[in-house]
Image (cartoon, rainbow, N blue to C red; front, top):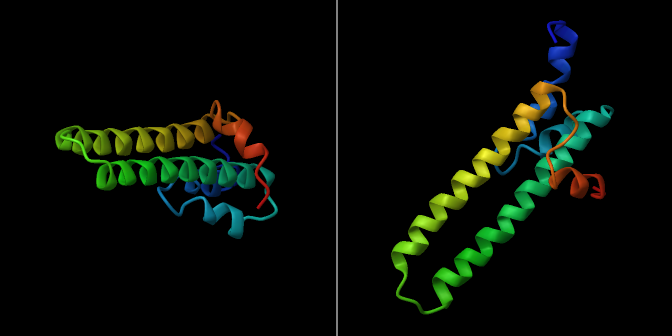
Length: 113
């Protein structure tokens, strides 16, 4: 992938894996490239899944009375690390020229935005 046009074509799919809002970049700025669109949808699926996990974590942390405050504080850091590792894996998949991440690729192909 040393050709400059090929490297430029990878910019938008890689940007899809910027945490929280990166998935919007290829979906709205590179609408003609199906590869970018797919990775934008995959980034959306990853972010949506972790947003739901964080919401459940927040509800458990704030509304369920427990004596495991340390567990909650360690668990949020574990979730953040897992989230960032999955996003990094998505960017590496793009650089390797592979199609999708396991599990997330199936979900991304079914997303209609």
